[in-house]
Length: 218
Length: 173
Image (tube, rainbow over all chains, first blue to last red; front, side, top):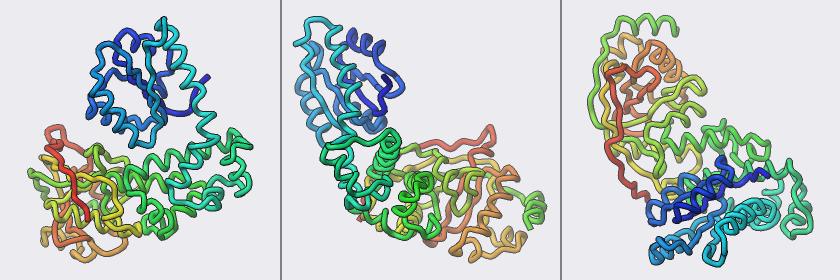
């Protein structure tokens, strides 16, 4: 099964790393043996994973450094899971567990924490967020309560909002995100980015963010 | 009008340009990227036609350009996440110097037209400059009293270079 989220597995053991590489989809899963905090954080910023799995049991791991890294990771928006690899008798069991976690991750995510964290991180009310997702506030409330799940087309829309959030959260401080969404933007024909997102014109808003990222002159 | 400009550009002498210039970008962002300018367009490039690297000869001018760009989005510098000022070492063979009054006269333009609010005139001129295979343009900043260098990587001469020298975190208030 192909997953729709991005995962990063931190596996300091070279043998296990090779086994993981042959078992996981390389288009959306990255495997790193890097445990040094600074280098690892740089990699995480590049990949922007939704899920980070850390094997904290490898014999060649510097425990102090890894602990420091995990403390840093907890400040990020990605979900972090720490595995104690030594509890598995065979390497294959660890591989099976890691692939299982990655495979089962998106379904759980989309039905609870992603949606609720997304709208609050964007500084939106539930009603405004429902407008962007093109659902009724009642449907959104049911998703948030876990009594209903988004359809595949709604999941695609949520993915677009996630992509937008990934981009904007790198460029603006939390207060600035809401301000950006509701300000009349001269680069967007004096339209508000929020209205363009409601009209599903994500491309225009992402183009404006790319220009801001790059420092294009007006 | 564009044909006329293109005809004039053929007869203008172009200057080489060697200097350190400044570019503001988001933290850890590729300092030579032109994706954003290509997708949105800017004062000196046409949307989805060709991209440009926007730089300034002085750090203060690059910062003023950033402030202008965020205010057009209804934001202030304090709303921005981490950003960096990158120093680029630039060596170009063919640059049009629009701060030279003689060149402006040849093109029947004045400084004000290059810095006014709309982008129509500058984008039209930029299109002619890009088509004439020039590597860049020196133009007055619309944000501050200073000069910008806009580089067109598509037209890079084989002996020209523009490379990242170093970068520092911007402290934004």
